[in-house]
Amino acid sequence: MSKPNGPATSLARRRASIDVVDAKVAVDLATAQTYSENVFLFVPNLIGYSRIILAALSLHYMSYHPKYCTVLYCISCLLDAFDGHAARALGQASKFGAVLDMVTDRCTTTSLLCYLTSAYPDHALFFQFLIALDFSSHYMHMNSSLVTGSKSHKQVDSDVSRLLRAYYNPTTLFIVCAGNELFYISLYLMKWVHTPLSESFGITGYFATWTWPELMAAVSAPVCFYKNFVNVVQLWKASKILVGVDLAERAKAREEEYMRGKQD
Image (cartoon, helix red, strand yellow):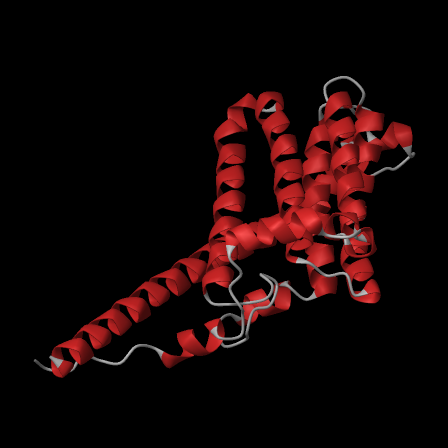
């Protein structure tokens, strides 16, 4: 029997940095946690809960009160910039908080996109594609981070993807996500605001017939395009990482089978 190629040693090296906790033990620890160190009550997670409440209120007003909806939605999105700072400043970074943050982002944006599918029925397929891309990209990326032992899905090595490493820089991430949400909010407001800039702000010239949400949409559209291009890259890179892990595990299984056969 010929010896197969050895498994990728980098896989084992990455996984060795993360201790695996049994699920039952984790549930018991979470149930018995004390008030002095209750992860559910960490300040960043409290900010996360407030984001959920604000987003829910925003969705409540979305179909009939655009001002309340927009203010609440924007505050919920802006708070996303504070939970990470609070986690680092207070030493309260947690896996629960990271997942809570991602789930809140995905659900909030998806809810707005669902409304846009009804507001712009001719473009419903486009918005559905954006929802599917956003969910699949982040789900695959999160899983690829977990199986390779990364402590955070935002930690991407430059040798894996320079684009993703630059994207997950806190400042870049905030600007891109804010610009992306601004584009979607602008599309939402375009259904409510019909007064041209010439009347609302006295602007003349090329943009005189535009509304201010249309102008905001035009400015933020390139950011939205970039954000979704990153989603495509992230989905592709995560897929390759998961396939690479499969290949490494299969190679390791063949090597173990070879060693057992050699011992027999």
